[in-house]
Length: 101
Length: 130
Image 1 (spheres, each protein chain N blue to C red):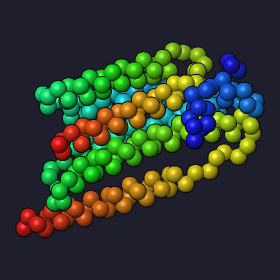
Image 2: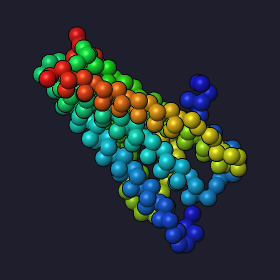
Image 3: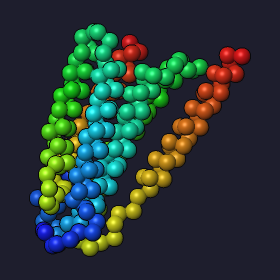
Image 4: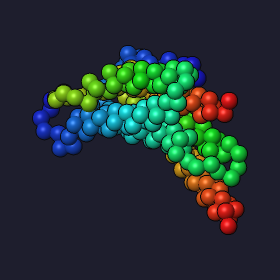
């Protein structure tokens, strides 16, 4: 892997991209928890689910954003963070529809 | 369709086709995936923000329609991101042409048309208040 100098700093750029993604996940999770916090049981349940998804995404993204040397590529992490994003979106749909009941 | 979903979750199968490319190509492909994922997350965040920060709009439930549309669009962008990553990785390994996609154009049109409709809604409210 270490073939000497890499003018593009590709592993570093990829790590920073993972960190940006984790930051975005965190902002979205905070927005979802804020929308869910209305003091009722359904809201608390959805807020709890959001925190769980955020924790799972934290565990998935953190190792990819830290360390030095050659970065790992691909693997199951990519489809799994996609699943986490889709679950966040569906929790959001539940939150919006809940407001209409 | 199920075959494609199974492929996303099976890195061993992806690693068995073709030749392992220069790792920089795989990293670039992964960053492209992450950029699309953040685009999807931004749409999800926009939907969540619309649901809690938008004032009441002139049409009933328009705010909820906007929020749900943005949330579902965000989910679609995320799913398409992993599918495109998987197909691109396969093409790189096999030395084939990268997969072409109309998705960016369709997404740009959808967001543009949605923004125009919102401008109309805001103007309608401004006129209604006078």
